Image (cartoon, rainbow, N blue to C red; front, side, top):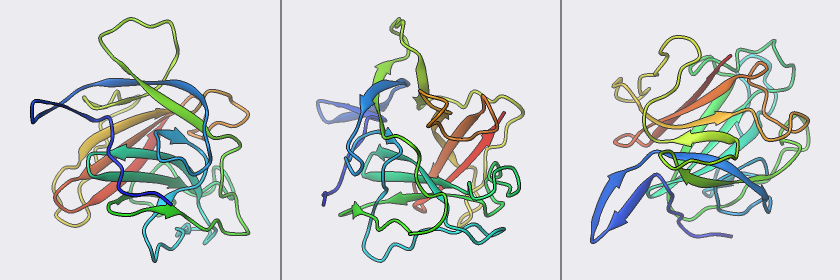
Length: 204
């Protein structure tokens, strides 16, 4: 459905790039497979993608967010088949997954069973962190994670180096359709650019 996507984590000017810190602000409803910053909807994936299942309960995971990044997109999933029973807060527990995809992506086929989708598709627009706004932030891109508890930055499963913080997600705009991060929790997305790995965890 879509070609390669680029994202807002890097700004370009006169051939140069530099990192910026941006807030994620509610941007209204989005199309389920739109290649934009969003929570909910369906993931955009490469050919051959297999929907992830929870290591603990073996059920299909819930898709949380599509995050365009430089050169590709990150898709975030967590288990919600039996909330609170599987360790979906743990980056390595097997009850959540994050994938860093590159190349041509298309809407995934959603499994027929399991808690697989959020109740709404919400666009996220970016806003400079250093510019005042009266709007509620639903997350943040770049900078350093704002930990609720202690630092849990994961190591890359491929090269064992400390992963790079990429995005921070709040539970959502509407509690009826929001992600479940334990109640007023916060999600954290990381990646290893060299290995093409991504990771997710949450704290509350």
